[in-house]
Length: 218
Image (cartoon, rainbow, N blue to C red; front, side, top):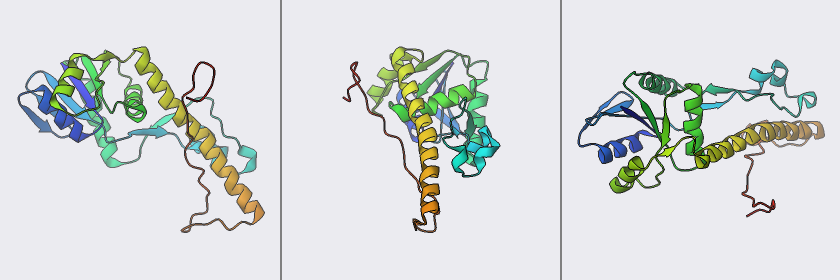
């Protein structure tokens, strides 16, 4: 039996409609009549742990704690009741003895790969994993993608996940450290930077650009 993991419920329903002649929706998943189970994420389910989870000293905003560079990356489930409930549903489905293969059907892009990759890592999935590579929700596209699945260990999939993880880690290390540094600088300089009551300067996300073999931006 295959367990297909989609990124959201609407994609799960479209996938069921494309791959089966009848199906029944349960709480958090779909049972198809052709030996297929389908479930879904609710966007991102996991996030990098807060600074204090790595080092209690990092809870305080201080020049002496910058830059914050963890020895290893830790993920934690997002503190939301709906997300926790859905992760529990997915975990139970993955662990079903009759499920022999996990099929990833998250969005065919960095964020979709990261959502699935984090979930598979946190659930310690040991069963074979393959990827449906599809950007259209048409019946024909979904059927073709399911027929021509790609191994999760294919270099194209591994590299896409690594690039997504790299961006997330860069966001954490550079974004959090720089936001704290700029906030502390503004405080030391007596700059009035508060907007809408906020007392922190957010430096935003880190942007990554593809480069060629010569290190030139494409």
